[in-house]
Structures are given as structure tokens and as C-alpha cells.
Amino acid sequence: MGDLDVPLEQEMGKEEPVCDPESMGSEDMLFMLYTSGSTGTPKGLVHTQAGYLLYAAVTHKLVFDHQPGDVFGCVADIGWITGHSYVVYGPLCNGATSVLFESTPVYPDAGRYWETVQRLRINQFYGAPTAVRLLLKYGDSWVKKYDRSSLRTLGSVGEPINHEAWEWLHKVVGDSRCTVVDTWWQTETGGICIAPRPSEEGAEILPGMAMRPFFGIIPVLMDEKGNIVEGGNVSGALCLSQAWPGMARTIYGDHQRFVNAYFKAYPGYYFTGDGAHRTKGGYYQITGRMDDVINISGHRLGTAEIEDAMADHPAVPESAVIGYPHDIKGEAAFAFIVLKDNAGDADVVVKELKAAVASKIAKYAVPNEILVVKRLPKTRSGKVMRRLLRKIILGGDLGDTTTLEDPSIITEILSAYQKHRGKQAASK
Ligand code: WTA
Image (cartoon, rainbow, N blue to C red; front, side, top):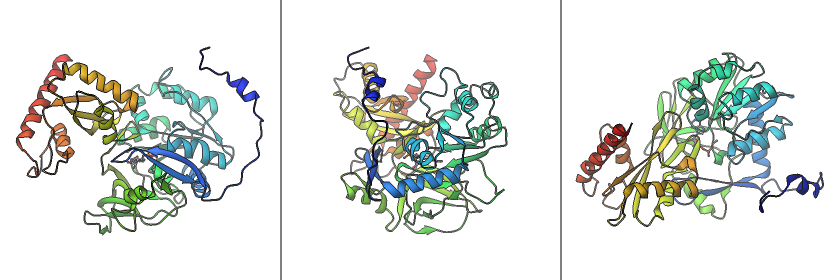
């Protein structure tokens, strides 16, 4: 045992098994959870006692069809809002048996989730699409090996679920007999806001869609001018037009930032930061973030945070990070960096940058690719044009480049990118 280790049993023995409850006001702070935004440092969102708990409990019961005696298996980390609401608060408030999962879906092998389902007779399974995308590559045999007859509801959270992953969850994991619920919500909302359930008995559920607003949630879509978009088969910025019990109340220590981040873009409405499409039938499909927030394996990250983590490197005066589609992670980070003249070996700097991001944020935040460029594309007012960088990677029409301070920069970055691609292909 090392100097820092403390035996758990010994410490637990010092405590009373029961402690007196403390009575709290309904609007007292319950907890604070940090999450990323498009600018600045992460925001400490504050949830309160009564509203949050009520909302977590009601959504847990109705979205997953949780019945007394059921075993609820949310495999999210409890440090994430998903774990807070659907491992701890919601299930426990409803007196449910809640499974605590601490591992990865592929340890010791790719059957880990389904072995857990069989052993604990889990009735509702809730996890992130990134794990589903990873597991389906290992094949169906890891699923079929275990008895999953206890399962009734399969939930997805944290990022859009692609059709392939949805179908696999439905057909292979759920043997085409379980209800699949794609649940949309955020750290800020406290609990699920858009999901296929509750709905009338037998109502349709469409793949890859969060579909219906939960009780008390009134979504609206806004166009670029801030007008409400009516009707079906339309897209826009997703806002919620009425307060609901589980919404965060403030950003700890900075209420003005809370107001600015969520209520300024569309006065009178809560702006989610996401875009959405409404079908002819009135169902919602989330299309992704509209700001500089990316979603790597269900982890929400501001591109600015990754840039900040790299900014301390003495050889890197500037960087720009963007998200691009990735098979398993959903999105991955691509970093463009500028090096000082005396920076030395670029490969060494790239390695150091990766290590810096891993230690300051987390391993999952490390950019998949880092490309050295001479300059970044900027507007005349000095703003980095990430939109152009994205187009350079993804291809397609570059659009209007007239606001660029120096248009020749595009050819410069394109040729650096093509060289980078060539080098990668050669090393494979
Ligand atoms: C994204 C996680 C598509 C979205 C509970 C949101 C989703 C952000 C879905 C919040 C979904 C979450 N379909 N996108 N079902 N669920 N998102 O705060 O961009 O970690 O704004 O909360 O994840 O991430 P957070």
C-alpha cells in the first residue's frame, strides 16, 4: 500500500451508518457540474433541490417505462450529467435498483455490457452511441452469447445516433422487441427534454430521432433572423420557450454569463446551442451543435478549451481546432497550429502538444490530427475562420472568402493539408 492509499473499510468504520437529514429549501443548490461552452472557461452550472429531483425522477419513470422492481442500468460515468440524473438521482428517487458500471465496454472483452445485463437481469439499458458504434464492429456473437430477455427499453444519449447503430441496438441487442429511445437533453436541462416516450400505446418510433418533447417542454425552431419557423419539414436553431422544473438556475458565481449564454441570442427563449429539424409529422431530429462545441465520443468539448490547453506551449503562438466526422467517436478534433521560427523539430512539438491536452483536459480530447501551417485564415477583424478550415478538410465549396484578410492563405493551407495526407498514406 502506498503513502496515499487509505483502506476504505477502516474509514467507513469510523462513520455512523445513518445520518440525520438536513432540510433544504426547494431552490437551494443541489450540485454544480462544469460543462463546456463555445468560449472561455467551462461553466459551473447550478442545479437546485426540488425541481431537478422531480424532473430527473419523472423522466426516468416515463421515458424508460420504469416499473417497480425493475433493474435500471445506465452505464454512464456518474461524473457526467447522465450519470447524475439516471444513475443516482432519478432512479434512487423512484426507489429503483440502479446499476453502477465502472469500466469500459470492451474490458475484459466486447461482451461486457451484455454479460452485465444477463447477470443483473437489467430491464432498461441506457448508454452512448459511441459505445454502440464501437461494439458493433466486434460482431453480433458477443451480444448473442448472453441472455438479454430481461431488457425492455434501450436508451441512447449524448450525441446523434446514426441509423446503423440504432438498427443494431434494435435488432441485435433488443432482438427487435425492445423500445429504443433516443433521448436529447443537456447538462443545462437537468433531464431528458425530447424523447420518443411517453407516447400513446403503440405510437410509432422512428430510428435516429429524439422525436417528442417531454411534458412541459415547448420547443421552437428559429431562423437566422430570430423569427420562429412554423410548420413541418423545416430546420432551425432549437430553443425552448417555457421554463421547466429541471433547468439549471445559474452559472456559479456569474449569473450574467448564464443570461448571456442562454437567453441573449433569442430574447424570451432558452437557446440550446443545437440545431434541429422538424419533420412533417412534427417530430424533432437533432442535427448537432451550432457553435464551436464538438462532441467526441459523447464528451462535450469547446474547441477553445483544446486550443487553450495547447496555448501554453512556448513554440505554438496560435492554433485553431475544429471537429470533423469520425466513424466511432462521432466527431474527432483536428488542430491547425502555427509554429515559431525557432520551434525546432515539429514532430516533437506535436507529441508535446498531445501530451499537454491529455494531461490538462483528458485523453479523449487529444486531436486525432495536428497540422502545422504558416498562418491561420482570419477575417480583417482578426477572427479565425474555422468554417473555412472545416471546408478544407471536408471538401466542398469554400463559399464566400471575401472577408479573409489575405485569400492566398487558402492555397497555402490546402497544399500543407495535401502534403499531410500524402505523408499519412505513405506511412500506412
Ligand atoms: C448533444 C448530455 C443528438 C447535444 C446529456 C447537446 C445529443 C449536448 C443528444 C449536451 C441526442 C445530447 N441526439 N445530440 N440524443 N443528446 N446531445 O451537456 O449537442 O454532455 O447540446 O449532456 O450533447 O451534452 P451534455
